[in-house]
Length: 308
Image (cartoon, rainbow, N blue to C red; front, side):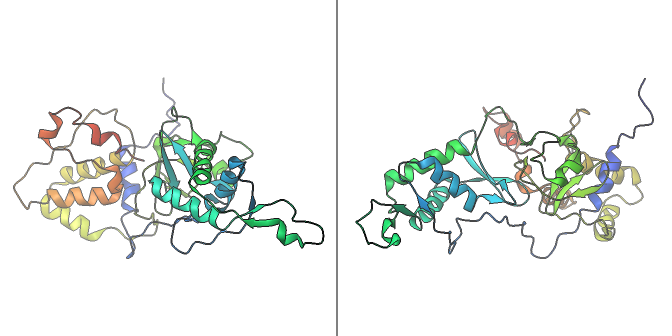
C-alpha cells in the first residue's frame, strides 16, 4: 500500500508554483555567464604555451574562458559545443569557438631556445604566432578535453550525488529528480517544494525559461481577469487551464492527454499560447502544423523542445 505520509504534489500544486514565476523584469535578458570569451574586447591573461602540446593549451583556454567558480562551462556533446549561459547550456557555433581560440593564442607566448649567455630572460619567450595548424590542433584537443559521452541524455547531473566536488548548494539539493526541477532565470526551482536553488553548470540542461521566480510576486491580476473574460462563471475551465500550465512545467506525460483549445478567431487562443511559450521558454516549445505531422520527420522539431 502507498505511504500516505509522503506528499506527492498534484498538478495544481505545481501550477501554484507557476503563478509565482509570472513576473518578468523589463530587460527580459537572461543571466550572463562569466565565461563570455567570444565577446568583442575580451582580454586573456598572457600565458606561455608549448606549440607541441595542444592539450595543455586547450586546458588553459578552458580555464581562462570557460570556467566559472571552478566549474567548467563548456561541453562537447553529440558533435556540438554547448556553453552555460547562467541558466542552461546553449549550442555554440564552431566559428565562435574558433574565434575564441585565435584570440587566446594570439595573446599567448612560447618558449624559444636561449639566444646565448648574458641575454635577459624575456628574450627566451616569443609570441605564440597562431596559424591554422596550431589553432586546429588546439581545437581538436579542446573537443577531447570537453567531451561528454553521447549516452548522457540531457537534462542530467554531471557530478555524482554527494561528491566532494559538488558545490555546497548542490549538496543541499540532495539530487532531486530532474523532472522536479524547472530552470528559471534566477536559479533552479524545485516544483514540489517551491524552493529556489542557485543555478549551477553541474546540471547539463538545454532549456530554461527567461522568467525569474519571485515568491513575493503579486497575484497575476490581469491574467486572471483575462481568463474570467474568456470563461465567465466557469471555474472548471480556468482550473483546467491552470492545471495544464503546471503539467507543462515538468516532464511527466503519464496522463497521456492532449489539450485542445477550440474557438473562433480572436477568442484568446493565441494569447494563451504566447503566455505559455514565454513561461516555458521559446526553445522548449515546438509549433508543428497538422500538415507537417503527416510528413516524414514531422515530429522532429519536438525532439529538441523539452522541458526542463
